[in-house]
Length: 330
Image (tube, rainbow, N blue to C red; front, side):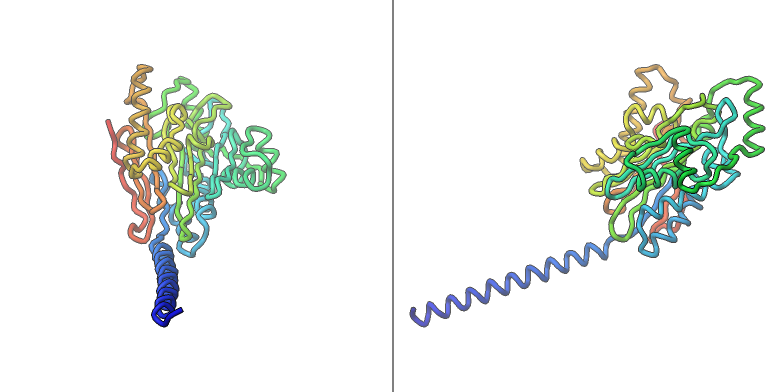
């Protein structure tokens, strides 16, 4: 082999190794930059989302997991006896019984849910226990209560004096016509992105005021009241659960984000589908309220609702736990 050929081979080998080194370093820089760009965010429905977000933020700002954050966050309104739509203090059904629904979903697509659960202040924690400690994804009624008690949850009376008085007043007419933005949202939904870039969500409610005993809405239904896809985003719903279930609302929002829509636009499209169905059924739109909130994998957020009156809370490094009025169609 002549001298020129040996020199050419050496130079080629050096160039190849240099390229491989630079490619490795470039990949490392990109990876580190991506990690640096991940900023936590938590959003939740309605005015009580502000206090809920504050609790969730304690975990997110300390590099905690989104799953722990959303559970801790929604437990705040669950335990507040002044709240008439969530947990302890929630309005009862037409038989005077407070029944609770909740679900939770993490970044691994693990899910847990409870429906028509009585006597337990924190149904969201029971839902998480279903997810982590049983081979099932949903427990309801007496079975859910038995399981909760076996896990050490305390049995309590959830019907506070104020809610009982409202129920007794309602019994005078027994007219079931929920008022938009008051009796027909009855939910806190929360979704969060943590510093590791992982998503989780939680949804919990006492359901429609003065509903038929046994009624379950969208809130504990994975895909309807809540859905998380760690590759795409997360969404949760509030409002008239029967309408949300017709389009598997939260799953629809996430799938629209998968197709490239921004969170706000995805929420709008889901609301438009509900309107289309309601019109075909000749259902008066002014009696309904539907709202969706969503975040995507990059931390973008958005919301949309049917009619004026729905708001949601946002907490991120840029937005210090603000309550935002959602855009509406009507």
